[in-house]
Image (cartoon, rainbow, N blue to C red):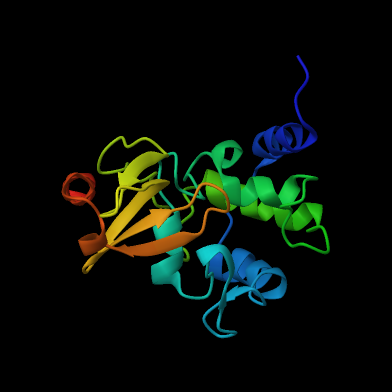
Length: 190
């Protein structure tokens, strides 16, 4: 069976993890050096809807479900890591490759639960409230269908993840059909 290069690399790194990765000491400096330019509150850039220097926002991308970018304990299923090791057009960072050491640290961090807590117990994989499909059909008030994943309710908006670029978009509940408004509330319910 043929596996893509990035799948083999992630599998190898998963097998090679040995030490504990600390977010503040090991991961945050990697993100600051390689990612903050395009994904931080400090620079005012939130490309594709991602920010890595606001931990409250960043942790929304960490969950054990099909729409999460980081799946705690599952680096091979984490899109966040995949785009760092792939050779495709969506490779990040866009103009360079992370070192093998940095990729190994990120892999360890995800394998251990992707916790932001330094020196404390590692976060167990967080189960989704519900087992939701990654892409759902949403109908707006004009009858047009939107294909996107549910992320959360945020006030009077439903936050949807666009499948083409994984960007999070806040869409007013009032602009959805009655059935899609109910769907959003059902998705958010425990």
